[in-house]
Image (cartoon, rainbow, N blue to C red; front, side, top):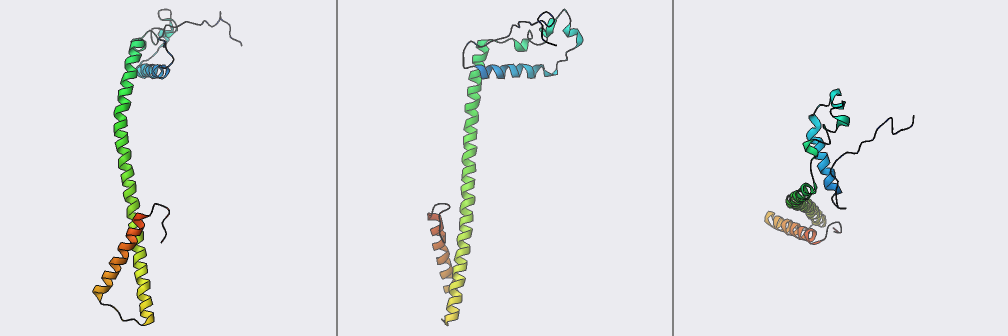
Length: 166
């Protein structure tokens, strides 16, 4: 069955329209808000009757849909203010996340450097033991180990991420 004007009437609704080419998104938000406010309202068969034809009184003639360009301009300014305020919090949050990410990365690098230093110290000790060198005192060993760890940690800290060589 095809559409015929006399069997299915078309009604021109009186709803707010924008008078510029940049407020379409604000209008969409305002209409969405009006529908949100009306979401709980019950529509009955009586609403379809002659007293309120085609739901005009229930939806489009309701207070929630009664707005104009002045309301849209005010809403646009409120949205700008909200976005500015949210962006301050968002930027601060992103800075904290970046700082935490860098701290985790440095911790991993230091752990790797300490592991390499311990491995190098063990290798030197085994090499000395095989060659028959005299064992150093316990204090000497700790001093050498700390020195090697410090050099490795410093080397890891000074090299850019992803390009370090051990």
